[in-house]
Length: 378
View 1 (tube, rainbow, N blue to C red):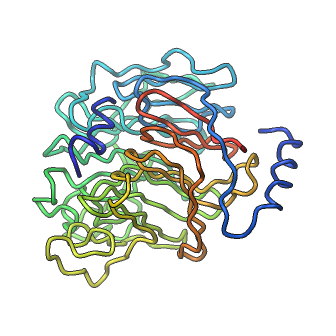
View 2 (view 1 turned 135 degrees about the horizontal axis):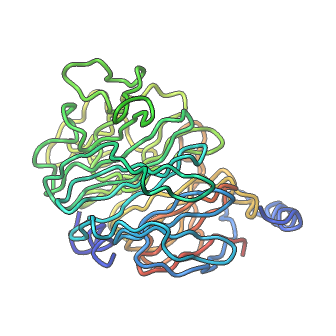
């Protein structure tokens, strides 16, 4: 990962009407097979270095700003901060407020950030009538970070009701500690925990390494370098992880909703489908469903969502993503874990650092410079 131009640069600068649905459905009927859906980006707000977004109560979108503030986007625009932990975060390297999510009942808000010592921290707040009760704050999980890059930090609840947490390999370039393939560390992993099932959390009994004395029971999947953004398909429950590459390949990993976990995505013996620095492919390696190299403008994949909204019928079921350095929105058509078509959506979101999905499935694009844009029909 290039410290200047990749995620470190990111952090360093760090229900529509039925008539609309019918209109877009008609437009979709004219879309020839293999062609891209017609989309546009509509800037709806400006934030201060937005890093993540999450669907909130009553079709709101809650936006996390890198310095430590949280603001709510609704029909009236982006409001004043409803939460501010900026005096408890550090923003050097790739650090800051990196992730935000609600539990399925909107009863708790979770933040993922790096504290003043650079330690990755997951905090929980109770929510009542859409208001954060700051006096209920508690820390759920922490993980020390050996370097200021590759923190990961994305969080979301899966369709199973458990909290998933993405951590990078700890940084330093090339995974010097071998964390990606080690099972005795949370670094380089996707975790799965039950934050309400214990103090401070419980490890689900069906986690793939639960009860294994040689492994961390929190681990759901491993072999990840910097899974900056991941998501679940809201219709199928399938998991998609966009893992930022080292110097040659960006990758998107996939697992079906039926997966019992335990996938090894290969890092640091593999970068995408390619051996890394003479590494040998692990026998249990799960290769990405999509990868792209650095011959173009891309340098840091930004994962998005499978679109399940109503506004753009021609985009439904496609995985929308981008790249921080390139900024072009692209989509993948996926069937049974295989990419059947790739599309350039013809719009550029700037320095795309994240996506956000509203409760009704509509998508927003977050650019680190401040633009919050909705993906609309063209």
